[in-house]
Length: 377
Image (cartoon, rainbow, N blue to C red; front, side, top):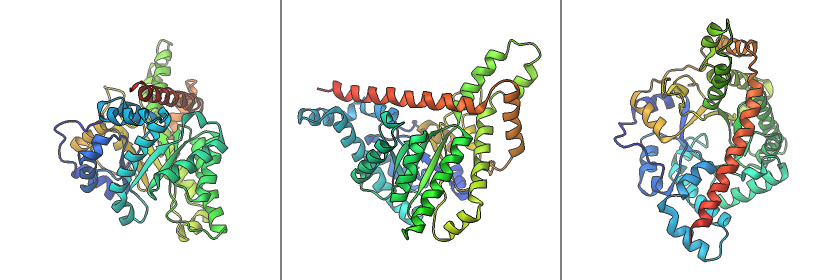
């Protein structure tokens, strides 16, 4: 059960300020207790969260708890497969969450209020399979404020273009590379242009590009640790330690600015198209020596989203500082990437490794999830 930490302070100040600055905070968590207890409705009602994301690891943690045991057992005894049981229960949770967010979705004219459900990790390199699975899940969810998550692989990007053309909202996940993000943004724009050429409505079709943050620091800092024993590198290592993730994200934001500044996109926007917003993911801090809300505070900008676990949400509500920071330090961000390259650390190579690891982690979580469901008598 992914409960909010106890004694959570009032969530009004810093979170409202984020919204006023144009950034939406989404909750990276879901379980039925969050919904049934009224906690999610409270968070939405007070303006603390404006959307919700899920993934196999989140559902694995939820369904391993007691809240689901009776329903899992009932459905299993009725002859449902473990996969069918998981989807039945997960879809019910997401539909309930989507209904809570629906007034916000309508009030913002489809800009916010989304919930996300991920296609099976085994389809990461199967474009046709991803499209078919996304179509099936979209029909099952039956909510206009749903998003289907597909990975940022070549197959996933191909699927994104087809799904957006069809009017299915997409959350592209596991993005670490600024180059891959650029390809995702261009695929989205191509799909929107295709809809426009076909005379199809451009709104309320929506998409986000989930760009992962903290894992970049974890991976790069580990590489820096391996270099620490080399003579003469201490100052260079100290200058970039803990800086890679923010720098990488700021470069991605600059890429977004370039993409959406084109005359072609401006014409589509005038016709009603929404930009594909950058969503900062993996924003819970994994370094106890660093400020626990830094991956929110240092990445605040308009038309962006940050999805956070419950503990990070509570921390930012308690002591977060809201100010426009994404546009600051752009030159320094690119310089950090250059300094890392001079040390032999290629951010794009790191991104490729992290994508592979992320896919594997979701596979493991998905298998554990199905195993947990199977184990219930």
